[in-house]
Image (cartoon, rainbow, N blue to C red; front, side, top):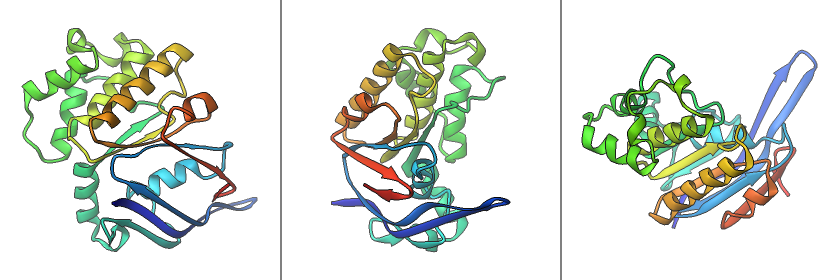
Length: 219
């Protein structure tokens, strides 16, 4: 079953030196439960694709379909609600709030999704990420790998259908990067769809399917 697909999408960015085609008549389908890596050189359109799939960047042309509905035809509020409940984002820069504890950084995702903050659920997710002894720590008191695990916990707490990860291992040493990929694979084995961007060909091979992009196209 196709969960999400992008059809004939184009996205062009304009700047003082000209234009850049980030997506070029791009079509791609994601099936429920897939574990997909997206690779390619810098500037090839990987992050633009991920943002378009997650409802955060409207293509100039084409459609992004979720269960046969065009998400960019929805009202902004409906798309925001869908994103809050169905999509978990993991970013290379973690985007943790520095003055909030580990526990609070995860809990805030439930607030944004307008869900009740469930302490038992939060502790359970943090325990799964091997962070139960760090719940009162601030981000600057954690290692880089621990910060990324907090970001993953935050993305999982809403129990989304799909995780979109933009270079989740980009700032990590090789061993920690492998550990994070193992966590993502475990999440996928539990039935969630996972799509991640990587520059590392060895990590890309760990996915069940690899999509390589150059100049806004699949190659």
